[in-house]
Image (tube, rainbow, N blue to C red):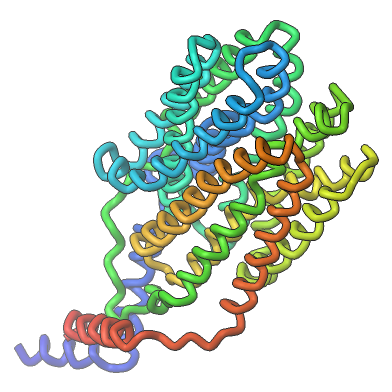
Length: 445
């Protein structure tokens, strides 16, 4: 008994506490970062495939198809604009229901079946039965994309080693950029076979990626045991700054919508350059291809708050310049810059959420879900707003680009306010943090 007491006193001493804490943290690191099953590169590839299928193609392939849908008399110009907005409305519904779908199917099941749903939706769009039919399947593809956007980061990032989460997140969301690039290069090639076969070809590609990534998702593990001191759990959530980030992300989403939806049509029909619209969209896709990884790396280097301010400033200027541009070389350069933004801003906002929330996977997932909902709500509402303005302005694309630039300017103001404002931690958060420390002390005792 005396020996045991002596051992206990030794363990409770400074050195013993440090050893125990080191062992606990070592065990936590192993449990939380070692993915059972597929290797890390396969998990990242699965995440990139999901963002490629659910958003990259399911949303962005529609943009270069807009002129063809009109020219082939499938739908009227106004109907085509509203059908494009249907995908964004579905995206909002998917973001809102993502946590429930994740609890019901698990992350692996949710991501698998949402990729399958997006594939089916693309196949269904190969038959122009009616406007309601097309609307339903564009809505379904958006719903799949919304669920994927919320769940994919939490399904992969917690199982990756290392601190360069911005780069890893950029690699996962690079699927968005690859999808945009593929829509700009693959769609024109498929269009030689006809509009229906173009939709079918996109569905076949998505089905192939869904099958290849089916077993690439990490299997969930038991949650890591908190360290005795609460170390490694991160600081408390800063709700005021998080709310400002949601507003900023909503304004950013509003700002990126007009080029995302109308760029190809602006060049093809607005400027009367015909097939040059497809070429400009390819350049937009090239920017999207490098945006996620480049911006994720920038977030790792500068910090995600600073990176977000910088890229928002650049994009606001580029979109304002697009509203006054006339020459194709100028539009081509601006298309590359603007194209890097829709997929590139995602890992930066995700990284900023993690900075504000701290290293708590459940809190990160919940906060990222709220950010995605804010962005999706803004995308859906602004898409219908832009469609209305587009119809009422006599299909004036430049007005839409100016509205988008103004939204990005407001986002920049909110971002600066959030970055430099002194927002104290709420009293209840301090109390919660104190309780967590008391519980950790109880565990040690």
